[in-house]
Image (tube, rainbow, N blue to C red):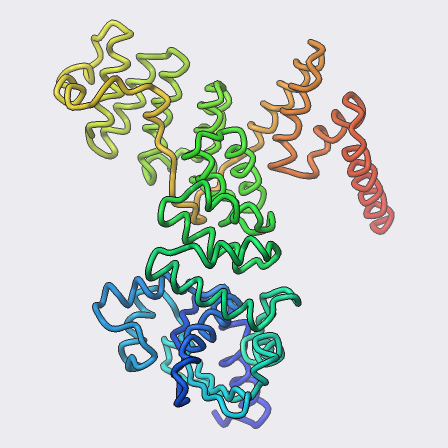
Length: 450
């Protein structure tokens, strides 16, 4: 078949479409410094960070970890072949790198983009004033990648340099002093808050990480999930529950359901925790054995010892009789007849434990947070909270009713029954406003179809 000029143009446009690149996983490497000035070496990583933040690419710290695992020096001098290997190990389908030089306060940049699966290359060049960097690169970023400039207008070139240097100190030397100092001055820089929060989280500094992760918008489900995880470690289960419920608005994954249930259990609501776990499809426990284990913990928390042991038996069949499972079995066996098959051979595992583990501490929170193919049915959970709200209102406990109704709205902001109850019976002005808008929208839609 002969390709026309028009078809050739369409083919090339689709091949290098910025939207196609932005949708996949991208890894960026340092840009080579072709200047004689070693004082601008930080810009090698600065350009890397700029494109990473613009595209939501693999973070600087994760990319550096991958290079470190290959035991090669982290410089801009890596061969293309080595970079491709690293990118593939990181699961990326697009690789970005380049070089730069500085002369008379003008930064000249050469940009390379590789589609790894086809080993195709795209090149582009631009120049920008050193004093207008990085903001003046916004049009170039938009043209070549389809991404928006990621920093606020107030983010100066000086602040950007401090940001990059601070990220390098934190990632390489575990020194967060400078980057936290900068974040204290600038609170509205989303990439700064995200990267700093994630670095602190990955190094186990959960209290500090939460300060920056909670600055992220509610649309950032990964940030919401990690905020929830920080709260579970810090025993702030009420706040953690809210973060996981907010995550479930847009991402119905197993980890958020399991963790919401864990928060409810620690808040003294095992029946609600059970409802959350029951919302997961039946195939989930086979795929995620931790769900079965946590179901056994929740049943035990309700005093259903034999039933907890039955569920634990299913966990053992799917996975194995772990030491944690033996401890839970021993805990349940000591509170029932002890005739269950799991009640044998648990002494050794328990004697190896230091102290007496509490039941709540046995619950296993999921640290994943990635979307999977499991889509829970949250309808029953909403019905559960609606019924609790009705009972609370009938008993004159307005605050408890509002709490239950708000949980529904965390899952479904436009749930009509919850809005009506908040508006009509709790006199909530915001709920009345939403309800009015919702009703008007439905009436408008009905009129259009007549």
